[in-house]
Structures are given as structure tokens and as C-alpha cells.
Length: 556
Image (cartoon, rainbow, N blue to C red; front, side):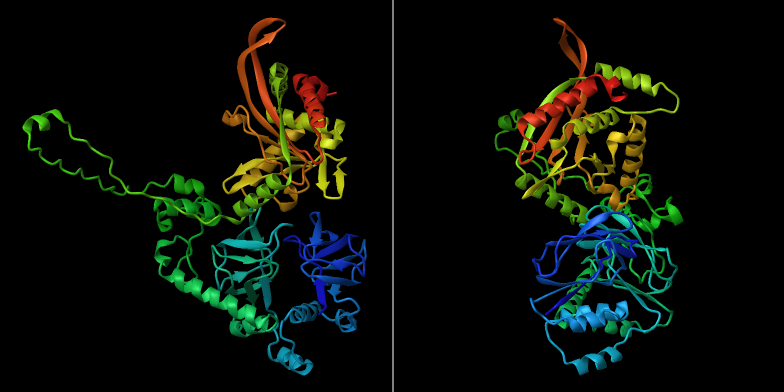
């Protein structure tokens, strides 16, 4: 049966998309996971993959044309299948098109007359909007509700923050596109659900929520719906018995406590009642520092009772042998649920490590001139650069001279990037993110420094946008500030290489036949052997060393 593919919502603010390029033509065979087209959103141009198998029967939006979200993008079905009914239905409202698409996926076929009568009986009440789990990143398949900032019954204005959604890349605030009352919450705090699952319902006060849920469920496969409801009921009944031990509040609470996910986790670990903590964040929200600064009553820790030593039958032996006080304690371990970001990091790194044949090249760089240049630059008014900024600038310039390192493996082809987008690995509480400096080779040292500070700060505060973490062509990971002398990194695909930067060390070195005090730094280049040969990687490092040992050449 033919499947209607609608224009996807690829960002939280996307209302319309433009087809930048079709990668499949009418008549082509489509497999699940094949890239159908490149879609230009309001933030970036992203690849859109097919969730269906069959033959591409129709293209609804031509290259260069734009269309609203949920409008007909393509039709996939069996070769030679009649799709005239679907094409005629494309001229109706987007809501009818969406319902038609859902009905076409149902495993049990229904008669046309019963379809129309069922549609009338379960029509969505006027003014009601169903909010689904948004796709907040191009790789997001599932989202977790970290916290709700609105409760059932609250008035919601367009632009209000509804909830914090944890994706595979970051925890982001999700704002409402509608105004009304929050009538229903479909996914509770801490629970995850696939993209497009029912997240919430917004509409006029007094709306019959059961009727809305019935109307929404009528468009879904009955078996899938019943399975989901059963799982939800089991989950809710299981959680009722442990509700008192959790810091997350429910919609039945008389007073809602607003706290960040990290603050809740810290409070739970430390046994702190959030009701006793004063929040310093926006609108009294409890944040990390509030838990760290909380002065609560210390809990009494029971002291271990020593087991009395048995008396010896021989007084001489008892006098010569001292009692042995063995340690007494309780085994303790803790199992925490992996965040969506942590699971995706594990998946991506495993894919990279086991699919790309890594090899490593290490050199030691004389940093004497770099230290002197940095001190001179930072002595100027309103100027501040770090050694990491100098490494990023040197890498960007070296990549322009060695474009084979600035590549991506694409199975049958190798993509050579003539632009330089530098990825900068940044550690956050939930794992690791990689903000991207676009066109880094065209930036000055001070511009690089300011951009890295801004991106890293917003990444740690969970304010960074998804498109600011996409499109890197080369990545730098620096652990020198932690005193790490040398390490290797896993390639951040689809990059072909990543540079690992160690600490600057003061040690004896030989210069002009004399042993003197010097400052050196070890850097290691991890390369994908499918695209970067050993000699190519070595030549890149030689150029990189020349820039770092003679920083004035980066200012020319």
C-alpha cells in the first residue's frame, strides 16, 4: 500500500522547508534508511531519510521549491500502483492529509463508508492542538522529558516554555507554538518516547480531553495504541509505590517545585528534600549551585560495632597476640539510567571505532615562541587568546594546505571539503558535545577565542542550538588543561581525522648542542586510513608544527 511522505519538521522552529536536492528519482527503488532528499530548514540543510520501502511513485515538491511542514513531499508504494486517490486528497487541508497518511499505515483495511462515519464521530474539537514530541536535532529518534515547566490547567501563551526535552545531543527548552490551556500531558517527567509521540494537548478551558484523546487515537493503529496504553498503565502503577522517594513532583502536587534535571539528580544522591531548598534561578528555579550550597542537617551514620575478641585459653598467647580489627562495612553500588545523549555518544563512538581503521601519529612541538607570542598578544588591550585558540588557527591553516585530511569517507566516493569547519570537543555534565567554528581558516585568533568561549559557555548551559554542532570537517580535543601529557581520540565521524592536544611541559631539551630548559607539547593525530594515508598525515603534522613553532606566520 502506498505511503504518503510529508514535509518533516527538522527543527523546533521550522514551519516551512525547501527541497535543496532530490537524491532519488521517480521510479527508483527505496530501502528504509535511504536518503531521499536534502531539506533546507530555517537552521541548516539536512539529509532526510526514508522510513518506508518500495518505489518512489511521486515527488510533490520540486528542487528549489518550498512547502509548509506536513505538506505532501513524496509518495512511496508498489511499482505501478494507482495513487490518484492520494494525489486528489493532497489538495485538502493538512489535517486531513495527516489523518489519511496515518490510516494508510493501519494493518487492518477498513471500508470507505465506515471510514467517513468514524471520522465524523471522532472529529477533533475546534481550537484544540495536539503537541507531539519534536525532532530537535537531525539525528534525534527519541526524546526524554527532563522537566515540565507547565502543569495541567495552566494557561499557555505562544512562545511559553512548555518543557525541557533531553535529546541525543543536549537538553533543550521546548516552547509552545499555540495559546490556550494545558489540557493533558502525555509523557511524564523522566519518561522517553519516539519523535511524533503525543506530548501534550492544548485547547480551550473545559474541553473534553477524553474526546480529544479518542479522536487522536482513532487515526493510529489500534494494536499499537493498546500496547502503548498498557505499558503506560504498568509503568504508572509501578511508580506509585516509589513516588515518595522521588524528587520529581507530579501534577497532583499542591505546589510545584521547579528544578533543573542535574539539581534533581544531585539532591536525590545527597538525600536532600527539594522543598527545603531555595532556588536562585529564574522564577525561583533550583539549579546546581543551590544544591551545592545547601546547608542541611547531617544524617547520623551508624558506627561499626567491633566484634568482641574471643578469650584465649592460654593467657600467654592472649597477651602476645593483639586483636585484629577487620573492616566492617556494607557493599554499595548505584545504577543510573543512561541519558539519551550518553546512549547516542556510545553508539556514535562505537560506530566510528569499529568502522574506521584508526592509526595514530604523534609529534612533540617546541612551544617557546608560542608562549612568547601569546604573552605579547594578551598584553594588548581587550585581547585574550589561549594556546587552544592558537592550535585551532594552526589546524585550520594546515588543512587548507592538506585538503586530503579535510575529507569524509562516503563508501563509493571520498568527499573533499574545501571549507574548514573546526569541531571543538567540549565536556558537559551529560557527556561530550562538539560545537563547530564555521570557516575557521578565515577567522583571526581573537575571533576564534571569542567564538570558542561563546559556544562552549552556551553548550555547558544547554543553550546551544543543534545547527551549531553540525557540519564539522575536522575536530580538536584538548586535555592539556587537565595536565594530560599525551592521549589518543576516537574520530568524530564523518571527519577523517581528530587532533589530541596535551599539556605544555617544561623540561630539559637539546638546542644547538646544549641542554637547556624548554617548553614542549605533544600532539597526536588520529586518522581514518581509508581516506588519509600515513605520509599525508605526517605532512599535515609537519605543517602544523611549523605554524605553532613560528606563530608570526599565522598572522601573515
